[in-house]
Image (cartoon, rainbow, N blue to C red):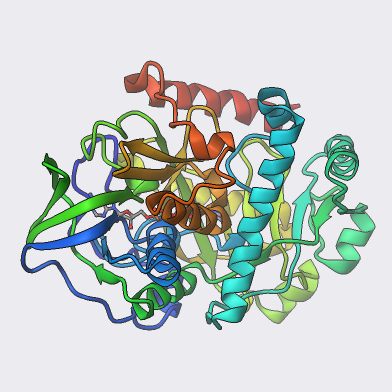
Length: 446
Ligand SMILES: Cc1cc2nc3c(=O)[nH]c(=O)nc-3n(C[C@H](O)[C@H](O)[C@H](O)COP(=O)(O)OP(=O)(O)OC[C@H]3O[C@@H](n4cnc5c(N)ncnc54)[C@H](O)[C@@H]3O)c2cc1C
């Protein structure tokens, strides 16, 4: 598997053998690989949600000539591999920590920014009629231990008191009656906002919107070298050199160490794996009483995320290998199946049909950064953690605003500050391994 901390070139790779690829239909038409040198106002490196939405907003709202350069196919990275949880979230920092770090006013503004991201995706799907198997609203945060209900109640109180935001608290019996019967569910918090989607269909939807608005999308066009010549950036792809006045780097968790010095060591790619089971039989459905279409996570720090898909398969994801070289090790999928079966002992015979993984992008300070990195000509957005289905599109809109210099409301720290460099960057994975052991012990043994 392409490993951004090891390899410099993510190009020449086909889509993973995922459930999403099998069920998304054909990839939309694109402009093919770059075949000759050309000039463009804005080049966007990376054709995931961030790059495609930035292209859409630049072309449709600001009339800017834009070309997306994607190493493989649109949505080949995280955007076509994720769990499809559209959440009211942005990065990994809790609101309590945000208040401590930025103060109350900025925390409230960040809450609004995050909410706008979810509204934006909801609105685009509805208004632009993006066919992406959108599910009804509902996110369950399930207590995996009885004591976690205290954490849930306290969080619900905080959300109400500080943001006037209402959630529902479900006891174990209500959860069972309304959603599913799990051996490992002691109650839950239910957010009324958040829903499941088919992530690759969503990426294809943004691709179509961006192209319809006039953006060019060059697939199979990895940027292998990046020079500066006067006021132009020269992006070297196998088929030609793209000369751009401005560049948006939308490579997120797939950013290689060598793509550009401004991005080096500012993000940490962390593997997450997904398995999709065969469809549940009628007997399994009635034994688990799994009627919920909500997206679901548990209260572990190393959380599992899962959902029942419209065709009655179950998707479950969670932490995976540390390195790309170990990504194919079946033990990571076995871990996910073991976790699923300990949640639902009635699914003892369940097997899986699909498995794949992808690089989630984490920053040192646990928040995303949407940043102008160099004198009004290089921009990037990185570090949404496991919340990029919605926050990426907010980032795409903000990147487009930055490019055209419309920066009212850009005084949030996530929109002004560069992503900090990781200290001791070469040892990021050593620290990750240690943290995994610590969190596992805390989640499972206490
Ligand atoms: C297994 C998994 C499950 C997840 N589940 C969820 C979830 O349920 N909900 C949620 O909100 N988030 C989830 N996420 C995170 C979410 O998918 C990402 O935050 C989001 O898709 C990021 O979008 P992006 O466009 O910024 O990056 P990506 O979609 O990763 O796109 C980056 C693109 O850059 C391209 N690229 C890299 N280098 C170059 C180069 N040199 N030249 C040209 N192109 C290049 C890559 O080919 C890639 O396509 C999950 C992630 C993973 C891996």
